[in-house]
Amino acid sequence: MTTAKNVGKLQITLPSDREIAMTRVFDAPRTLVWDAHTKPELVKRWLGIQNGWTMPVCEIDLKVGGSYRYVWRGPNKAEMGMGGVFREVVRPERLVATEKFDQSWYAGDALDTSAFTEKGGKTTLTLTVRYQSKEVRDAVISSPMAGGVSRSYDVLEEILAATASGARK
Image (cartoon, rainbow, N blue to C red):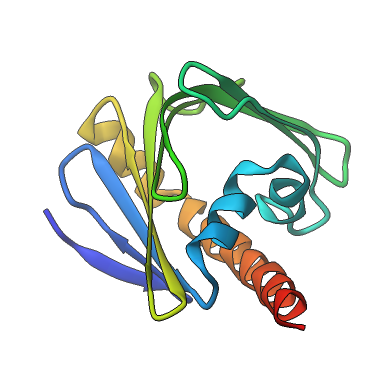
């Protein structure tokens, strides 16, 4: 199944009955986009940071077998945590890791594969998430997840633009 829809600048496809692929083009070199996904001081500035949410915990041990841990805190002090283990780390091309929420609303772990490709100074990021079943994938695609990812990538785009312009000076 390759059903596609766009949410802002984010393109979403369903490459298989267990996967969601999200693609976004950033006007920045892939090393910057890679760093924004792998350096805690950058991740904390954009991932899930919207509507008063912050990320007080962002730990990344970037190596095969290393783990990551994120905890977000909402304006009402509610917390949401997740983490996983890195299975592949190929700087600055590919990142593969498991994903599991502390209070998961879907069954099993997910497997996230991020591919970073650069052409003409622009980076295409494709994040493919594979779930345990079609039912889980369908529940996730029906949730507000796509809007949240799109908004997070909008914030990332602003950070990358500021970083890239600072690097050019």
